[in-house]
Length: 84
Image (cartoon, rainbow, N blue to C red; front, side, top):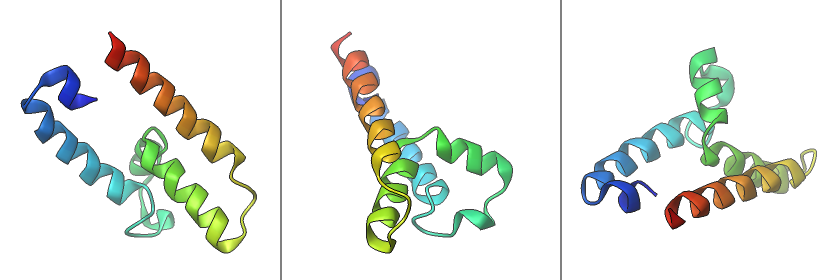
């Protein structure tokens, strides 16, 4: 999305967003170690829900429905913005 909106400078934004998502999603370190700010920041990014859904599948969590709906919302929002 950043690449579509900002061209080549969007690549740098993608790298920064991906780095933040990796740390705040719980993929690299447990979410319990994150401060409240980074926990809330992670909840506003799609990687959080992808990792949550994967953990539910792997370890038998509460279900993947909420994660799937959240990811679908991110897809629809991104597709809507890219059409503009």
